[in-house]
Length: 265
Image (cartoon, rainbow, N blue to C red; front, side):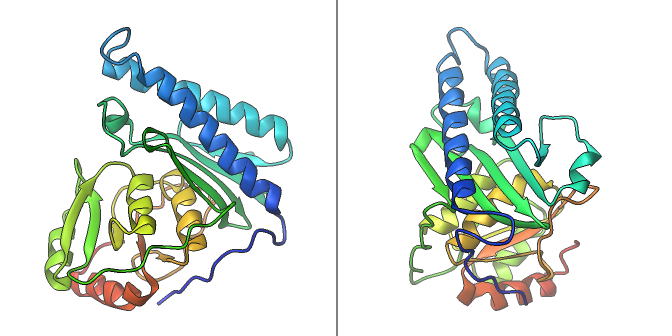
């Protein structure tokens, strides 16, 4: 089992200013997206708003990062990948609009903006903006995870594409399922105490999990692959299909249950 200690504001290759920049960029991109979303149902169809949101948020983040950190690499869901990033120790990993489906369905709030800085393959700086909730969780001012509550564990799962294994996992754990949208929203739910576990397998990329993992680690939560191994970023293939985010005290139980259900990874 892998356990994670809280990241500090500075280390080899990053400092406090990076944390506050990540938070600022996520917040500004979120404000841009809120402006676009106002047009849904009036000047924009939902799919038009989704496309415009993805494009404009990516353009803003890519431009801002290039201007402020010309020596850093960038990996974005909406940008063409450049293997130049593999030569950089510092790489920004962003999802300009996580939860695109929910973004196009006002008044849903379970969509997000992810901004992460990975250094040496570790997600050490991150911000997850939940613009429709007026909330940004970040490593700049880490929010300690809420206390657990009595009763069954609550597992945050996709409302539209729940992985096939999750019902078996819930049965083994005696847990309840909590459907919601984006990966950022699910990770935030664990930090804020609205869920206890977020598990995914079979369909994610680095930009889906990097910022949520950085934020969850800074909140004192356990983060790992479903086999308990570390999450490593800025790989040649950005496919990173599985992760676990949960309370430290639940990690051993959750990982054992995942092993018992034979989840592929």
